[in-house]
Image (cartoon, one colour):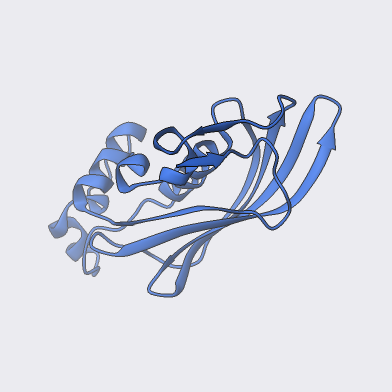
Length: 161
């Protein structure tokens, strides 16, 4: 199966969603990658000492997820020019989350296209984080790729941090 990439975006286009059940290992890996060793993000006892039920997600991780979703859809030639990220609710190890996005505007540039994308992460119907992202795509025309290499294949493995 072949999928068209974001090289010919339209307002209203929906980016492939992805979902994942978060594990303490996911939270620890993100902490290691960002040098954030605050134990309440990966250690049950540390989280309980704070009165929480489980280790909780470092909010910055959602920015990384949003950026990964954009790059998966738009390809390596894309430049994420800006993100306005908001946190709405806490998320814990064991929570199942879904990341969704839609293109809200498309503007031609002299050397490419600027798209604005509305993104959100939810758990059990509750918004956890939202983001308005601006992505610059170079002028290269429409391309098609095999589904294994396209944004149409946003799997759990594709979102690990």
